[in-house]
Amino acid sequence: MTLLIQTLASGVAAGAVYALIAVGFSLIYKTTRIINLAQGDLAILGGYLSYTYLRVGLPLPVALIAGVLSTGVAAAVIERVALRPLYKRPLAIPILCTVGIAVLLESTMQLIWGSLPLFLPPVASTTPWHVEGIAITPLQVVMFAIATASAIGLLLGIGRTRIGRAMRGCAEDAEVTSLFGVNPDRMYLLAFTVGGLLAGLAGILIVPTIGLLPSSGLNLSVIGFSAAVLGGLGSLPGAILGGVLISILVNVTEVYVSSNYAYGVVYLIMAVVLLVRVRGLLGDDLEAVRRI
Amino acid sequence: MTSAVRAVSFLVPARRLIVFVVGAVACAIFLPVIFSGLNLLIVNQACIYGIAALGLNVIFGMTSLLSIAQAALMGVGAYTFVLTANRGIGFPATVVLACLGAAIVSAITGLISTRVRSHYFILITLALAETVTLVAANDLSLTGGDNGVALNTIPTIFGDSLVTPAAFAPLAIASLFLVWYLAECLRTSRFGVALRAISTDEYLAAVSGVAISRYRLAATVVGGAFAGLAGAMLAISDAFIGPQNFQLDTGILLLLMVVLAGGGSNTGTVIASAILTYLSQGLLTLAAVGELIYGVAIVVLLIAVPDGLAGVGHLIERQVRTGVRLLTVRVQNH
Image (cartoon, rainbow over all chains, first blue to last red):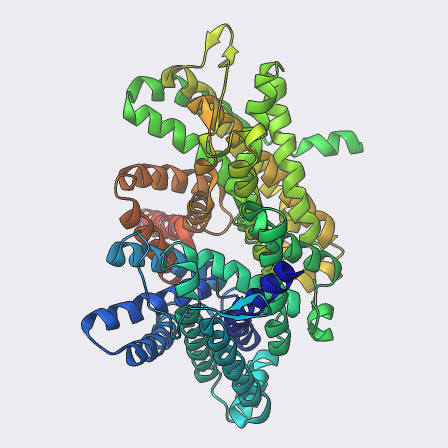
């Protein structure tokens, strides 16, 4: 029983961070209809950039914040340079382009920082507190708090502000929205920038746990997508819920079944959701209707 | 015309058949003579990737279903081939089994593709690709894990063992031409037209009476079968397979071939796979730089050369046609 609660607790902490990746992914999808397969690599890039800023001599909090901001800039540059020329082409083309960007980012990181794991200091201590036989680290609490706070802030921002409404409008019909004085290109750029910021934030939070490796980007992407699909693509609360659920499932599988197949469970969930209920847990009906 | 005749009639447009037979025989005889050593290995490799890329061309190039699982499907074919061959099943039958195995697994993605919109499809193929790699790397008793499996007996054709690259080359080249021929027949048939209609505008295709779901499923089955054939050929050529042959980077390389070909062109796909296989062999020694170049190449190709080799080909053809017309007009005027 203690083991189960322990597994659930660390699952929830990591899940909040996966939720950040999933939310960024869902936000980009919601605004541009593009699936950004480079999201996980952007997260890792955030970790590496923070590591470099730290090595240059900046204090840890500044280095981490600078890392997150630079990841947002990187995402904006990617959108501007690589994706903007492709919006008018069939959707498969810009998505394929993000695959290319993912490959590009991973190999660039490997060239610059090498393929051996590096160490990025965590934002909070990892010495656990013991409560009723369960070990919870301050890092896990901070991870959960930061991730939840930024997710809620984003939800309010998208749901309640004019810019949020304009972004949602672009997803429905960019032409009609532009008649209302909104520049869709600027909204797309904004979606990618915010998506990049969220990925960078998730990166600096999760990297101390999973290790700073160029190749871990893909796994992060996959978890983020599965979370977003499970919660319903395009639904931000769904992405948060999906992130936490997926992370708990991965942890439970790792502990009780086999660590080799933990990611297999993620793929299985994604396949089952797409087969049985395309709109996911909290997705809107539009998504289900728009099926062919 | 009876339905049976109509069913096979798309297989025999005379000109293409002549190109196919003459080309296959000539290449199979002359290429092993021209190339030797490492270059011959690259020729074989290009044929294998070419077959897989032609399969992906049916799925992605013609139907616009973005799949990154083609390398994993090759893996399914390769493992089916080796595991059945090592259990004593004869040579041509094992290749058929490999095609069947990959086609069935590909059909799973096809079944999902009939239910979801196109960009969910890429997530499903990603899941499939990673699952195949996971099983291959972890299911030690069946697949030998990361160590892979060796092919115990190399098959023979006409009593000639396929163990050397020179002996394998004619088979590889002939198979490539056969697959190219089949794919080309498919592209110009009613089936191919339907696939392109679906990829251009699903709604219009649906109201024109195209059975979208059935055609998508069929496209993934055909593409999967080609991937299975490519996997079996890879197993014969290497006499050994492991999970490292079928990872995501191979899937992306195959996608890059179809993108470079452009416009669902089969001939373009063959040319692109020859070019990219040759380049990737050169890049093999510098792993990360090689991948960086892939990544940049995908992005740049998509933005700068939207129609790929096929677009360039059409452009040249149009220029030549205009040139010839101008010339004839001038000659007539004189």
